[in-house]
Each structure stands twice: as C-alpha cells, then as structure tokens.
Amino acid sequence: MATPKKKLPATKSTSPTQQRLWLMYPPKLIKQPFIYEVGRKFKVVTNIRQASVTDEIGIVCLELDGPRDEVKAAIKWLVKQGVNVEPVEIGVIAG
Image (cartoon, rainbow, N blue to C red):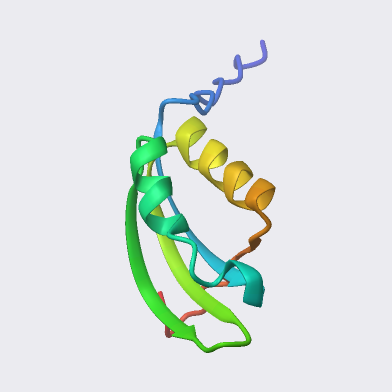
C-alpha cells in the first residue's frame, strides 16, 4: 500500500515576506519620493540597505517587508511609475 503524499501548505497572499530589490531611477525621476509613497500606499515596511544618487541616476537597495500580496503590489506600482526594479542576488557573504 502506497503512503499518501503530504501536501505542502500553499503560500498565502497574506503570508509575510521580505524582498530585497535594486531600484534604478532615471534622471527625470530622481527627486520623486517613491520609497515614502510605497510605505504610505501599501502595508509594507521599507528599509533602505544601500543608496547612491547623482544627477544622472539613482540606485537604491530596498528591503520590503509585509504581506506577500502587498509586496507584489508595491513592486508593480514602482514599475508603473517608471522605476527599474530588479531582485537582489544575495550571496553567501551578504546573507
């Protein structure tokens, strides 16, 4: 008789998640307060891990904590605003 397989719990949209992202702003968007707005519009906590801003480009490593669906919605909103959003590849040392 075969042993029944255990089902893995489905990831709920309200499950807490943490995601690190690289945000890259073009010159025309550098002065926009996107990180502030994300924290107000969505149920996420923002944590700036690293940043470099010049007149030509803004690069920010941002950590988003919150319910999975809120984090996804925040990322989608940032992209819609014209911010380039990429996941951070966390290496062994950076962990």
